[in-house]
Image (cartoon, rainbow, N blue to C red; front, side, top):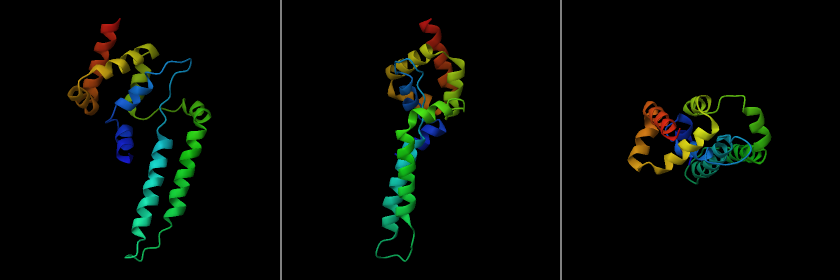
Length: 147
């Protein structure tokens, strides 16, 4: 899961970000991956710390404290997601391609792009995940086709 979130933040997985644009409602959706990344990082540190401090090693690493801290901060960010998102809307969202998409399209166009993403074949989605320039050409075609 950590690798998945790193790929999303690096801009190499576009599906989860586009899935947030499918949502209906009064407010524009905000993609905020930091709580989930911290929760999974805390889980990895807790599990990895107990493996490192096994009976065969002399390493004294406080994995419980560090992993628990990451879990606590991730849980607090998840619980207070809406107030934090209100303040972070002014900051540029990660990844960069999502910021570019938000600035260049309207909410209705992003929703159409997100729903058209679901109709793409798997190989095409894999191509657009890693090739951002081709993805933006495809988004322009989607916008032109739905106008």
